[in-house]
Image (tube, rainbow, N blue to C red; front, top):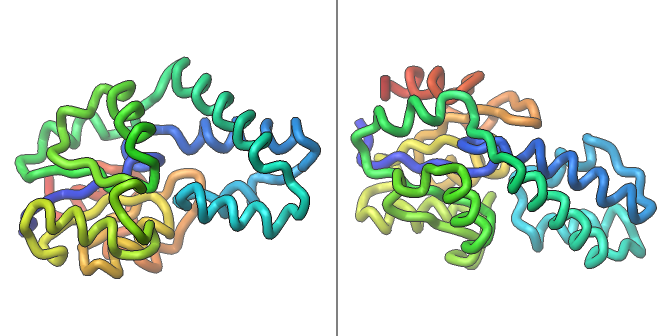
Length: 208
């Protein structure tokens, strides 16, 4: 049915989006910007340059370097204190006999750091990061690259994503998409299967 399984990382396999949300709210508040969770939700799934454009457009005059420094420290402290896996991750990954890859909008260093802290790095043959593409999600390039690394058709790849941005990228690449929303609810516009958790999504897609 599939030739490869491709996973987003943040919010899909690891519970890092909640850390990003909490540390981000604190960072903006510390620098005089009282943003709300809805604003933060608009940044979910976005690569850092795209997020910066959104922030600057909404908050003219923001000292984004200072906010990001504060935010990055808070996020790293949160990750260092314990990076939890999303429900079903430890059950699903060992049950899969397909080639597996990570496709993330995080930079290479951050992606590999989180995979190592989460203890799941060895499960994946390839890790496609922001540094490996010219056009990040929602452009299909990251998923097209992952499929090409395995030498398979994107239509034979199953993707697990949490965000609209990621699901759109995978859908536009021609992959089959399982979306498991994390901090931001979804109607599943770009998903073939909309699931409450990874294991349910895997069953819906015929993996289990």
